[in-house]
Image 1 (tube, helix red, strand yellow):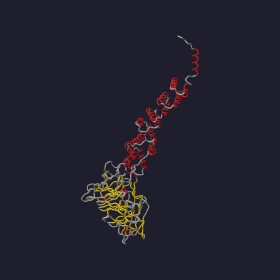
Image 2 (cartoon, rainbow, N blue to C red):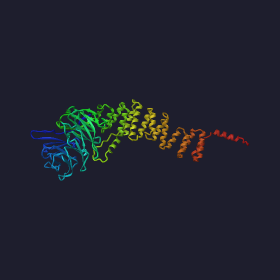
Image 3 (cartoon, rainbow, N blue to C red):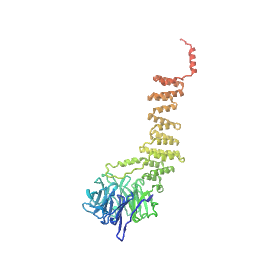
Image 4 (tube, helix red, strand yellow):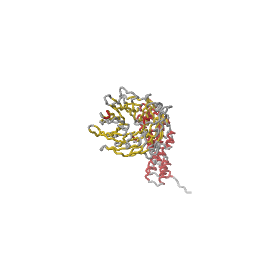
Length: 621
């Protein structure tokens, strides 16, 4: 499930030659670039990145071996820490005698620096044991100016560029962490919190190498390795709130199950731990693995090199360095790789089908793979109805989950990358899942009908209105499966919206279920489709009921000729006569009822009546 080297760039490995030529490499976590320094920059500095093809080559003065190399976001400035107390600003686009111009900066107290980080293109953050200072670097004037400073008590510091978050460790064992947001030229302190790192006699202090910061499912976490002499290592996740008034809380604990050196990546909201001695990688998904705070690995796998690398590189070596989110640097081979997920192999790695589908539903840009896998699972009948409903709820209710996450923070002071859950539209579900299931002759119609009902229920729970074409397909499938009672229930309890097409569809199923006819008429009545109701009554030859309906609803007289025509064709003489007299009594227009009396009596009956009248005798009493 993990593939190494789909993207890679070569660089010159570290070396210390006898002739005095020295090569050193530095990785900048903020800009995600690797910088190669030859003879401390005198022979050149090369910067490369996996994210773009831009390669930067410059030369600088040899002022000593740097311990830190940081590039500004736009790549125009570089900060090098060549001495413990100061940092040199390298103007990469301003040269003199082919050497870049430089500016030396430091904090007011001249104390040793713990961190040198770029906050913006021209704002540099300097942190020492007692202060954090924000400097403005003027590229045109080649000068610096103090913007803001704040007092801190720091043993070490980590900067997380995506959220402009500075994390400072202090306290007796360095286990008290103070988050500070560096944004808009201001320092905003958040609530400090204590972490458990498994302190013991052999490990008295919490070290910088045992902490990391990452964004997982739209929330920022501080990840802490917790060691124990009796049990295996744990990775604890502390969630940082978006507002400054809430205290960060312990949220998750990942059970690693081993001791010894390991590396960490966070790819597509998955926490991946690489164990060197066992040459295994553990994949954790805090949303899928377990509803509790303790999580076991969702998948235990081994990294596979990309086929383009021949011969394949050595894996899990001592020369590997891992950096968030997905970078692997082979210092001996001189190659920087990216690590990626191969989610198409999840069917082989995750045996439980429901868990696998939930895993795929949370991955980015994997909608086609998810839909295809869902269809295959439904065809194989590998899911229970309860599991099917959970999957449908995930893809229908994701939008609601996103909105609730956005409304959590009242006054956010920290930002991070938002997580957009997978949303599968009703049209996509119908064309890619429901229609293929319905057309599959090997599946029982009742099974397909139950699947559609589960999807309809998930839409209802998510407060989403089913589309008309979906309703029609569900009704037809239920009717074909003989599930008339279920069809009657979803219509009676208004699970699906009333519409004229739905009403006519229900009317057509009168022969199978007589109560559906009345349900269809009721839907037409709720939609005020009076003309259609009259047409339905005339089709069923309910002429008198149609007249009564017209009278009660005070409908347009334009409907009366249709009823009169139907009465002439289908009613007995007494009924037609009653209708005529009723219309005369209502003083209707003669044109509306004139034709109804033309054929009340046949010619023979009229002749017989005339003869009888002519020969009759009038008796007087």
